Image (cartoon, rainbow, N blue to C red; front, top):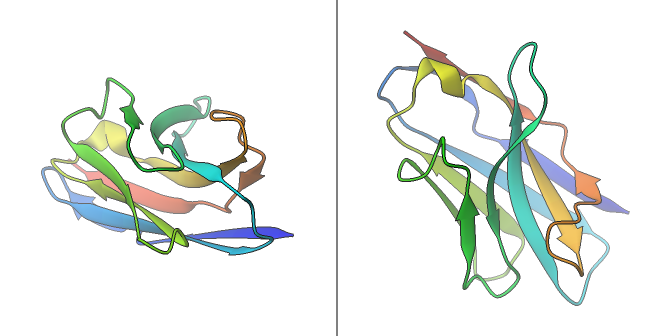
Amino acid sequence: QVQLVESGGGLVATGGSLRLSCTVSGRAFDSFHMGWFRRAPGKEREFVAALNWTGDNTYYANAVKGRFTISRDSAKTSVYLKMDTLRPEDTAVYYCALAPGRFGQYLYWGQGTQVTVSS
């Protein structure tokens, strides 16, 4: 059993910053990749950012590139999403996800954390 627990969401004004955290616990994998996704009201879930197992490669959606930064602690038990210069269109529930083995195939998801950016 794998558990992903997000935290750090909240209400912030336009231009502000937030740092989301996702803690991974439970079953151990030889390697895994992490990602962040979001779902805005009335919209489909969309990719936000991803980090591969070694931490050498990061990937970002065009909408957040240059404003968001994904990172991970050295123990590989937590992944973070630093969000700067937030915009009202960033308002969504943010989910972290884990892909064991193959990059991009996310099998485990957190429950989500709400981010609301006021205009």
